[in-house]
Image 1 (cartoon, rainbow, N blue to C red):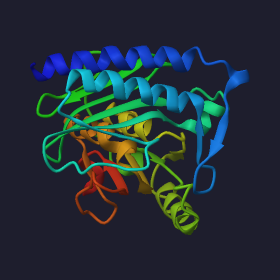
Image 2 (image 1 turned 180 degrees about the vertical axis):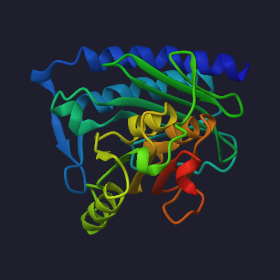
Image 3 (image 1 turned 90 degrees about the vertical axis):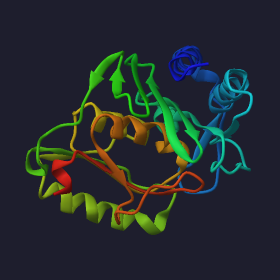
Length: 252
């Protein structure tokens, strides 16, 4: 199976999962709390992840599957690994805020290979294959060419890690004084894709998990952007890390 065929299969599955989100019965959204402040999981997170796991492993049976709603995660250094967030932006989903996405990253030998992020509410499908560019609804996209002073900064508050909250807002304020404005969406996957599409110039969050960025980071890079940890180190996929995603101009 070619990489284009793999991508096509992933997209078909993700579209089906998008229908689950859009058709959710708001009266039956059972909510459970996980560790960390405001860290929730719904029956729909579990339902979408079960569907993704079953169908993605039919596409690549040799792959390992790493989903947000699992306790144990396999290593990703060798072979294929699906790193999946069934609903990125669960709090938004619970509040019916319509800023949530399904994120599927395919890792090959420890490196990003294919990325798919789908916001079913806007019907925006972001895709990338390593070395072949980034796309929004099959149209090529590229990061902004604007400097930070003409840019918008997106950020996440690392809400599950209270020790990082103050630093997150201090950094946001520092960027606010240098940019046009700041935004907080509640979905790192969508924020990364908005960097890729040139809608904003910089995104940061001080602690994320691999399923938050495995797909979006590749999409940014294939759109001409740069993704590292906030200290400039390479991002990691076996464990979480900070994320700083920008166009090349904002790195200077």
